[in-house]
Length: 365
Image (cartoon, rainbow, N blue to C red; front, side, top):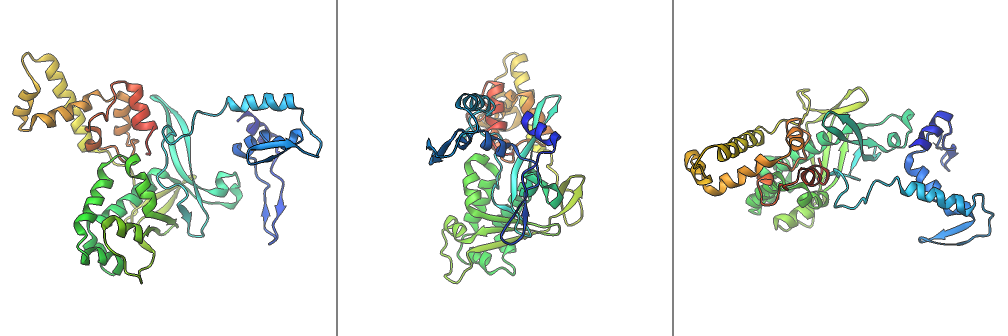
C-alpha cells in the first residue's frame, strides 16, 4: 500500500500502449496486484520462469539476489492469511457473472470502514476498468448485497410460482406441464432457508450471467441445469439459456449506483423482524430460566403452547454475540442468516469470536 501511494503521489503510471486496433491501454495507476507481480518477478534477477520453476537466463540481472529475497520476505508478510474457501471473508455470490449491458465485466470487490463495533466490510461489483484505476472511462459500482438480493429474490419468485412466471414463457411453462411445480417450490424454499455456503455452488451453476444496465436487469439461467434439478427432460429445441427480466433499475447516488424498484423506491436490506423477535424471545426465556425458581424448558413450552424441541432451538439465539445481533439490526448479515439456519444444531458456536468467523467472515453477505 505504501508503494502504491508513493507511485500515485509521484504520478508514475502504467505505460500507454496501442493495440493492433489502435485502442490505447495503460496510462492509469498501477494496482496493488500488479505491484506484487512486479516485485516477485524473477526476470529482474536474470532468471527465466516456466510453470513455477526458474532457470538462469541469458539476460543480465538488474537486481541482486539478496535485495530480491528481502523484497520477497517483505511482501510475504503482507499477505492477509490463507485465501482458501474456508476462510476467505464474505465471498460474493456472483463473481465472474455480472456484466454491463455493453458486456464489460464487473469485478467482485470490497472496502473496509471503521465503525464503533470494529471494521465493517462493504462489498461491491465494480466495472473492471474502474477497479484497475481507469476512472476516466466511467463505469459501474453497485452494492453487492443489493444486486444479489434482487437476483435471488427474482429467481426464488420464479421458482415459487412457475405458473404465474410461465405466462409468455414457454420454457418455464414446461415446469408446470411436467408436474414439477412442487419440486420447483422446494428448490425455492432451499434457497430461502439454507446457509449460503451450502447452495452457493448451486446458484453459480444455475446463473450463467447477470446483465445490468441503468434501465433493466436480466438474469440468464442455465435451463438444462434447472431441468436436471427439477427432474424434467428439456425439449431438444429449447434454448440453453432462460432469461428472467426484473423491474429493478439503477440510479446514481454519489459514486455508487443503487438498485431501485420500478416505483423508484430503493432496494434496501430490510430488518428481519421475525429473527429479531425470536432473539428477544430467546433472551427473555433464558432470563426466566436463570431467575425464576423451579422453571424448566418444559414449563416455558407449556406456557407458550409449543413443544419442548422448539423452545430448545430458539434458546440458542440467546447466545448470539452482540456483534452478530448488531449486524442483524443493521441489515449487514449474510442473506442466508435467518431463524431456521441459526436455530439449527451447532449453528451458534459458544465462543463469540468463533461466531464472528463462522457466521459473518466465513459466509457471503
